[in-house]
Length: 349
Image (cartoon, rainbow, N blue to C red; front, side):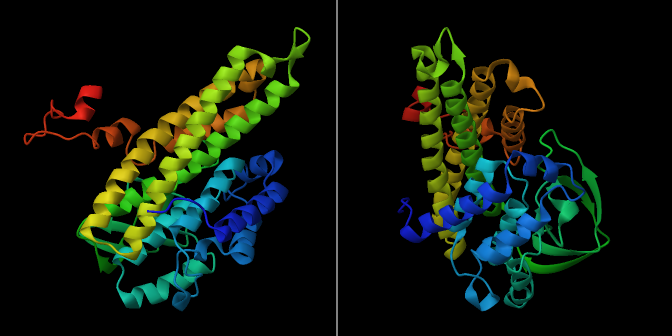
């Protein structure tokens, strides 16, 4: 797999970053969090109409751009960097489910709607990401992908106020495809979530470096102190390693959605588990260092450090926990009770 960005992908990231820098600063993020919808509706419209973020992985025959989830992950990373509330993650996961499991006639109905910016979500757990704002609500149940008709949605709050959840109940559901195994969809969800985590970690690092260059103590910027340099260097290593893990996972996700073979599913499972375990722990550490290296101002509501910390906590609790993903990488004996003692991984553990 090729993980390096192409020139077109770099251009996409630059365009999205430019738009977000103009329209998703700290004040805009806080305003969106406090709005009824929980996200900036005008920003979402601009992202869909000017950039086509929802249409990226959708084929041209369904009014999409014919790109892949690699491009989607680049947009998610930029959204993570600004901490902007956005329904793109939920919509992308639902799109993956439709591409993988919906019958052609239902794809022809659902995908053009998503491409134009209608928000979609997929119920994978009792708390459904962005359900209160969703126009299209899908679920995996009884071996089928189901489209819910007129579902009742109860909004649920979260520690990270930039992420909204809902409990979904429905009296009517239409089966739109068969789902023999929901594991790959969950792996795609983990891969895409890792892109948001990388962006948030980059935000924490950038904030911390900027602050330590401005904050003066003992007549010099605190960023010049060797001990703090080492801590920020460690943060940089975590961010860059997380980015590599995320790129690997999203490349595997894109490959599987394009060609859902058994071998591609195995590659996706492993790379998603690596990204899930590493990116979650890395963001937790970067967020903690961001708070500590900002000193007393970091624990105030007015400073954005608390937003990074909350985002880290929220994303680490989406899907499976990091330690569960890490355990799935270990080779187990036939009884499934413990790692194989002769394996390199088991010796390291």
